[in-house]
Image (tube, rainbow, N blue to C red):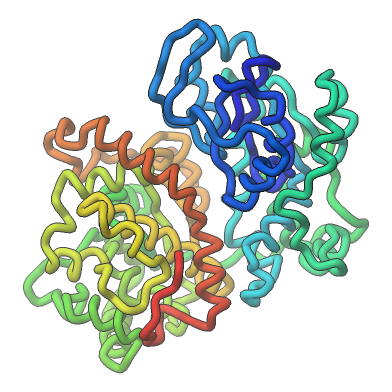
Length: 501
């Protein structure tokens, strides 16, 4: 992101659109008070070699009127998050610019950028199981509304659109750069070829990006007819949750019970349930150290065989000790839906910290994950110095990487439905979740469950601190999961090495 005062221009940086090259070129027009967020070390070296200003003023700002702020700007900051940090007169008078790319093409670039091809993940599976990637740019730069940019530079017509900005020399400086370059293969990676091989991926793009496709007039690549929709799958009568905890799982249990009118429990906590229906500490530690060994196989075989449909369980410990692996090989797989439930990460981590969840190792062993486990996707080393806050952030990122891992590795075997707490607890989002589960009707919204008793315990300052740290990390869970898979490792097998984040 750049706020260039001499040009009175704000650049909102979307992903996989040539944004880094544009950013480097635009920084050449900035003065010492302009705001320039950091890019990668290699790209910063390019900027320095050209003699252009580098990252500056992204944590402390002196605005043209002399006022000062301590706002935190970062590379891909959403416009809706940047707008409140910028003085109103500047936001209102400066030209807000972003770059937009045909979503059919952009998701291909993202596929190869994440090295999903090297990890053996087919393009069609990548798009089907990670449709949220298609919405990232519209979340950064909304197509309409008070935070929408004024100018959308079209990736396919950049020379024409940059020229229309009237900034002498910008196009020439931009075209001289090759920041990040093209990492796609020379053959077989063009849209026509890929979508002809994976027509189902084109259907996902068309559905998820319908608004921008209409707005910019994008068309489906190639002339291949749309793939026939598969027959309606059998409606699920088993429901489980893949979640980190403190994400609304207790609320979800009530929601499923009220709306689906089935037996729905949060966590089986009777004395006799531990070790049979509820994983005990040794199950959690065993799976995360030795994988799906004989002990874990027996636990899952006995538990799944004991359940009677229709049944829902939103117990978040299950997903951390082999639930997905067990379902993939289970007779009830075709009758099961797994709800991947997320929450705003900063609020989620603040909740852990306010409850001191990571201060007691037995709590980590029973309910969460421990940094000392040998088989992890995210290396916790860089967060150890941050104490309890670092533990909470590491755990949240590890779970995000595990979500991506399971979607990539088991997305064709297990039916996943993704939901976010902040959306699902509102009427429109609740209706959408019910529809994704194959049910119709006006949703019943239960009261919050297990909410923090004293909201002041989770202070805005703590949440803001954690959000700032998360933004600085710029963590990519899909890339981490793909690298982990490519290395030949898996969560259901023992390992003595940790993967780098």
